[in-house]
Length: 166
Image (tube, rainbow, N blue to C red; front, side, top):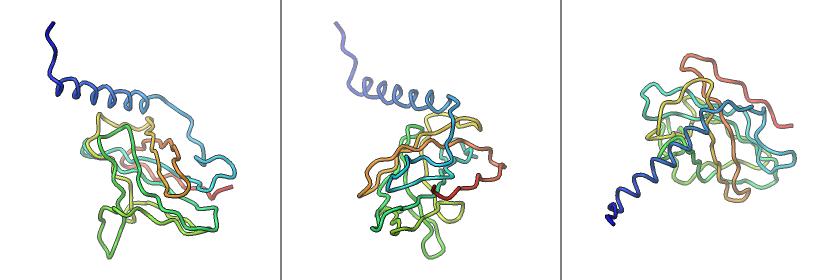
């Protein structure tokens, strides 16, 4: 019996995982105004992904509300739509990767919006088109994991408005 090289097996697994993320993203899904259950420490609203202009990277935007009396840190964002996802924030007039994460103040909020910050989904596994959805896993230092489903909107479409938490 001939065994395929390990690199071929690894490449096949990466392709399979990427395809699964695209299939999930291609299915129409309801997008709630808020992606958090009632009473959750963190509430995410207004999530969306802008259709990528270059087909390689896409930006995800959303607002995170902290309902607790303690600050928390959004440490990472992950997505099955691309090989990597990196938080970027505006600092001193320029956009840069935020390796330390984003601090969400107690009883406060942080909005990632064009020019102010985003989660960059890099090395897309396939095209993202308006009407699809992208799953985002937000990881908080204290609150833990949260899954958010963000619709893909057209390049020229106005951004959805984020509703305040209920």
